[in-house]
Image (cartoon, rainbow, N blue to C red):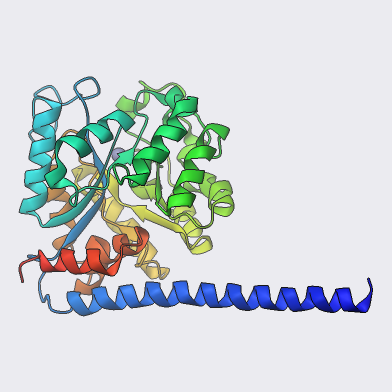
Length: 350
Ligand SMILES: [Zn+2]
């Protein structure tokens, strides 16, 4: 290579790294100042009574997908229709000062709720799922339609993705266009992990134990490093046959773009102890900034209250750790801007 060309390339390389470093440090600084704002606003709360909460794991339905009503057993009421379920969820959120919820549902249902209830647009980030329609993700129209809905804020999250239920790899080619949209619009992706109860498992013959392990997220976390991912349920399983807690912690330690929500394990009595142990192990490894509150209320909206109470009453957590799990970590995961954060705290009653 002749010297002038070599010198030219070297100069260009130095300029590139200089600009990249400035860009990177600006992002870090902006994230730090957002967290500082939350800490400053949050420091005024000596109790959690009126502290704002973000619930990153909820579900909504339409008349076809809804499976609630009196037949849905649990010690919680289940509204009789999808519409009543939506209305009760809004009430429960207001009762618990949940300032933002991330319910997932089918694409056309996200659009329906977004258009039908404009008064609730600040309350929800609707998320796209393919519950009981696993092949829909491969339909060519999905990416275009999704792009148009994300553009107008009718969808703000991809997931809960249920590939695990159908043995569809997280890195499946059908998911790539969804990840590309998340990357383009700077929105997060939430993926189901962990193993469901045995009585459910028998309804899903292709359920993949391997994909339920958070370690299986590795390829997409590497490939899509600008996207924040949520390993829903933190890889926690209902059976003691499967223990992915250490894998979950390893993945969080390896990938900065990974978070984990505690899901229904925080309100189901049979899994509350397991949840407590997991949270404590994660905190011990310095991961208290990556645990999210997600109720996974399914067809029982009142489960949101039980899940929040589990965190608020936890004698194994400090007040600062509870504030992180209930709001701060989710704000970071969602890359909320300062105006949204100020509004959330302004709407809270101190
Ligand atoms: Zn869920």
